[in-house]
Length: 327
Ligand code: TXA
Ligand code: MG
Image (cartoon, rainbow, N blue to C red; front, side, top):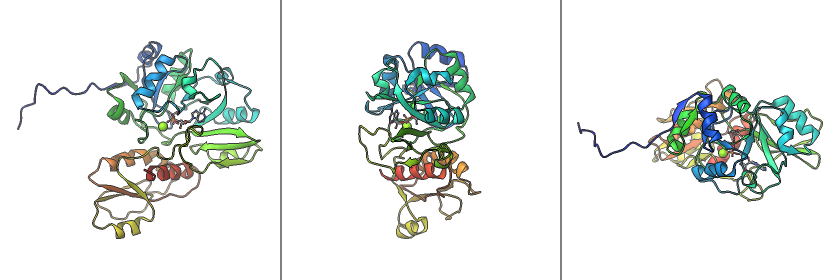
């Protein structure tokens, strides 16, 4: 066996623990902290401090035209950081917060333009995770936090995922276990007296249909700086992912080294993950990003994947699969 080479230095990785006081200290000093949420892990900074927020864009290699979501821990802060909020948005937030829902409101000028990429609206969300809620409730500023992945890659659903890709750039990832929703929050706004879903997530079209306004869902659309969040290739593995009928894809590509990401039924592929053996769309959502990562790290050269039933959070899962396949 080779002896270890003393000249090889391991890269510095983040600490992973749940000491909220250390997170408060780091954030107060303008540093980044990885935070757990029920949807995916976030990369957080003091949303009112541009010098801290710029570090988020640098660490993720994220273009400055893609705005950040601002996270709050107290309901009254919604009206502090937004103005003229539509009463129905307020009602929806009351019903689903804390939870996987982001609403857009007109922004308070104290929120730096960097956070909102110069838009006059800000996305606000109260995450439903006890560690991050406790953290937010100790801070006198909100946290800007995008998903804690390099720009364009699959979102992280565990502290280890964050550490693997951004661990060299941050000191601490608060440990909150695995994210139990597994896909990013639903983003909504109200336009022309209709609720518009800008990104599908854990709060579904059906959930939103009980507020007396029509609900419109965006088809996934192409990248436009004035329609941030709608960048088509997002959440993508590095390997090509092809979405379609898996049996036909296998038949047409028998010579390739492929992996299969299927909903509930096996295709007996040598490298395969099933999103939910019991065919449950919520379990599929929980597993989606972890399994995509595992297959991306497998020996396969290409990933074949199928859509799942469109019910409930299945719509969000299918949206992420379609985006991942548009690489
Ligand atoms: O579940 C989530 O929302 C996670 C966790 C960490 O809270 N966060 C998250 O952030 O997914 P991020 O940055 O990966 O995605 C936020 C999306 C972006 O695509 C951004 O363009 C859109 O929200 N967004 C933010 N503010 C917006 C605004 N004012 N108008 C339109 N879109 C906005
Ligand atoms: Mg993201």
